[in-house]
Length: 249
Image 1 (cartoon, rainbow, N blue to C red):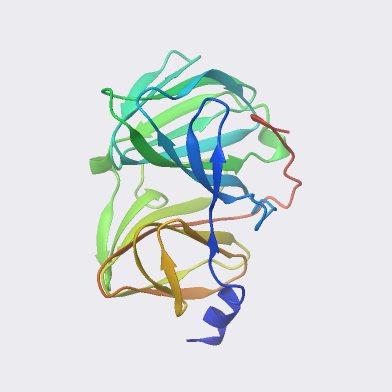
Image 2 (image 1 turned 90 degrees about the horizontal axis):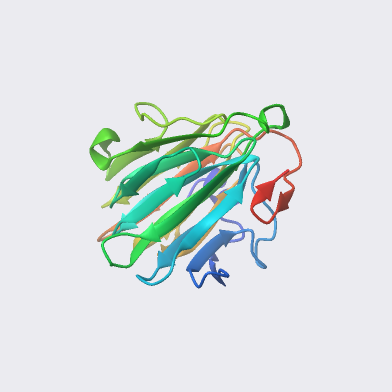
C-alpha cells in the first residue's frame, strides 16, 4: 500500500445509514449521517434508494442544487413542472438542475420495485437562481471502457452527454482484478459500494460501504471475484452548504 493510500484509508470505510423518508421510501445514506455528519463540498448528499411498488415520491419542490439519479435495478418514472416525463431503467441516468425552483415526482415503473443512486450537487451562489433544467441518458449513451482490471462507465465526465454546473466526474466501475482511482488535486471525492466485495486501499469494502477521499490521492481497488462501485469526485466551491430539507440555500 502506498503512503497516499494509507492516508486515504486512515479511518477506514464507513457503513451507510438507513433512512426512511416520510413517503415510506427507504435509503442507505452515505452522507451526511451520524458517522459522517458533514457534506463533502461540492456534494450535498448521496444515498442508495429502494422504492417498493406501492411507494414513491409525489410531486414536491426543490431549488438551489443539481440532482443526479442513476438506476441500478428496475425502472423509475420521473415527471416535473417543466412538462418532462421519462422512465429511467437499469444503468440509465437523469440530471435535474433545480436552480430557482422545480417540482418533480418519482415512482417505480411497471408495478415493480426499483433501486438507484441519488447524488445532490450544490450550485455555487452565483448560479442558485439558474433556470431549472432536465436531461437524461440511456445506458447505451454512456461510454464504457475496459481498463486494467475493470470496466468503467462514465456517467458524468468525458464522453458523457450529461454535464453539470459543477466540474465533476461520476464513474460506475466493475472491478474484476485491480484498478487504481485518482482524485485530481484540490478535488473532493468518495467511493460507494454497489454490489460484490473486495478491498479498497487494502481494507475490506462491500455493498453499502462509503469512503471519502478529500485530497489528491490514488486509491487501489481489488477483488478476487467482482466489486462494483461508483467513484465520484468534483471541484469544491469553497462555499457553505446550507441544506434546508428539499432546498439548498
